[in-house]
Image (cartoon, rainbow, N blue to C red; front, side):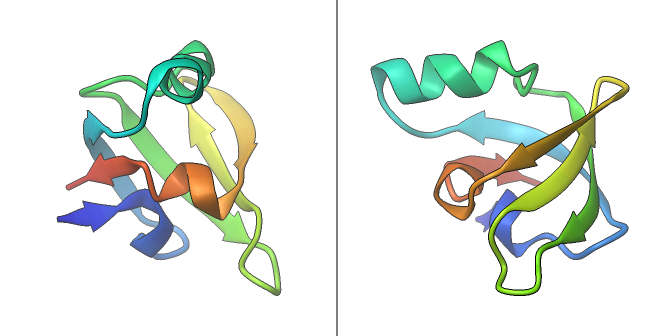
Length: 73
């Protein structure tokens, strides 16, 4: 199982599954990250937090804790 947190910079991955409970999962889905969507990892901050991604044509910054809940392939 690979998570979005483990994806390399300039890599495009596909979301397989969202882990997490209730409001946290809902917030991730509201940002446009749903099963089957392509996510491009643009860059990672020097200390690893946050991660900047492109999803559905817009840029988004995610905390490492949130990125760990997104299973990708």
